[in-house]
Image 1 (cartoon, helix red, strand yellow):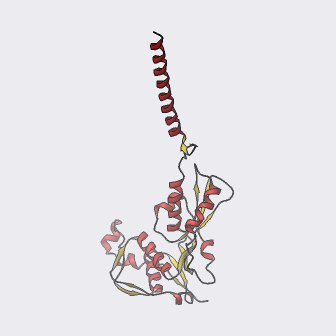
Image 2 (spheres, rainbow, N blue to C red):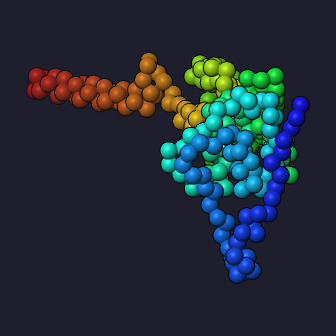
Length: 248
């Protein structure tokens, strides 16, 4: 299998004017794509050079990729370039996975191919805060969501129907919702944008539940009971006053 790698290059640094390079304060130029058609292989290589990453891809797998046609030019920064690459790869049924994040070594994998199962196996561990910091990123991650008020085992089973359709078309990655027997957390694995949606849903539900009595929150029930007692007390006082008046 022929593997091609987009090697890190220093061309961008060389293109900077000498005065800016020497000042140490030069800003990195924006990542830019002109309007028109670009092949996925060319997109991967251009993003790799801009981000200064090595991104491996399989020539045989990339035959399934669709060229991208842009009506308008795009200009963005590092995070935007990363997210754009992931979005356009997923459009063709591919995922960007991390081989060695510290060394900036990544690989593009065809989700419907023989190595599709490797995508979730390469999910990067992220905290909830790290996941929420980039809610649009489509890279496989895994995170543990701590719970305060709801039961993790019950919540896991209740959440699954809401995300059952994710990845059902075979061109994406299903969101996996799990639990390791604790009631205090839920484990999520999938593309980061899917995981973020699940986190938001969990956090919106993980609130203190009012104590119920006869179908009503206990404070509301107690308040109504007190109002009824006050009315009864007034009625008793009135009857007692009427009885005293008759005796006189």
